[in-house]
Length: 564
Image (cartoon, rainbow, N blue to C red; front, side, top):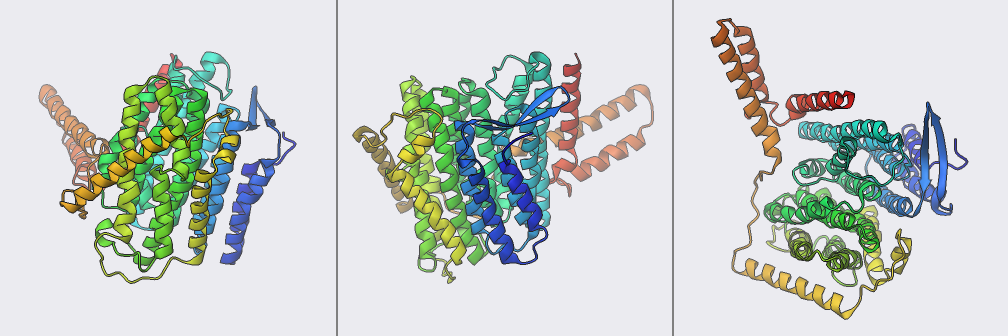
């Protein structure tokens, strides 16, 4: 089968051991050791394919190590370690086990050399990650978890059917570059896009991440969407559609983040925005653009985790992540404030911070390939990033209006995890060469030219000036307790309502035309409407009803097409 130890098996074995370790501190030390052992298991191996598994007539390649899979596995390992350290005080075995299985499944997926192995680990990330939401043990988290896992399983369903059709068309299961020339590749593309939170397919992200435990959110932010980025690089690099999809992804979350009161949801919108930069780079598909995407994914995992950690530390001490309830914490939590500002400067791409040396690659490749309007879009989106993630997050928690909150600083393990992440943000920003040396293509790029630095500083300082003027004159949107409607309202409320009303109308027309009594059908329709309609008790748990119906319809149509 294989002559080396599979890194994902180390994670799964660690999860099994955690289940039988009664001491909480021993479990945490074991969990922190697993990513280290996993990293050591492949760090010194030469590139190649190590795992072969005969399955019927298929040749399954479960461990392919190359430059692309290596760098994603490295950052996934670093993120897993930081997440486990940050969650030092978590006592819930369910959350601990699901976190390590989730990380192992993500690493297994990036090492997949064929589509079957990818599918198995793809579904593994979906099943393991939902328990990070359910670990909150509230009715709301259960409902949100149901919505989240339904979307993730739908992504897996699309992937599975796409693989079947792709194999029928080509006779190959190799996970390599694909062209959008068949139904199978389109379904695989949509599966990747759903997990990457493409526009109009993105709401699961803003719905789920704030509903998880504050430690679970840190873990969630690292793996699912970046696994989708990896899959798009591997399968669809150079697909032009991705340029414009990514450009849209960078812009639309900015407006929602500006008016959002829940700070974890602000970061979730910001995550959507950052994914857009990566998707643009994948669509351009040049070596510089792909290097930029990989570098951006690498640093994004670190600084986004740092921002979620800082918000999580505030939640741990204050019990809230609402901007309207926070402010003035710089006195009580000065170290958390410093680490949060480092994350904010990194995501805003200030020179000497990690975001600058990665995002510059994507911006340069966009300009070099003649995509002027896309480049303009990315520059405008960069201003939005500074506003909602670079300024709003630290301003709302640590400055702004002082709410009189008197709390303790974050616990030491949280501070150490944030400190390591902050050091990486600064270290990569000051000395990017080690990161550049890990990228899949040779890099001959100098981010610290006068043109790059001056252009970025002008952009950032004018954005800061605009924010200051908006605050000074009271124009900036105030923080209110509110619920902002996004596109998910369409398929969570509008479509079920329309379909149920249409069903009721068709039933009554049928009864009128044929003179047949359908009181029982009417009662059934009315009952379903009262339960699943916009005012029904299950209106917020649509996977129980309408989403399952949509999945069944999609499955039936796709299987019919596959049969034909």
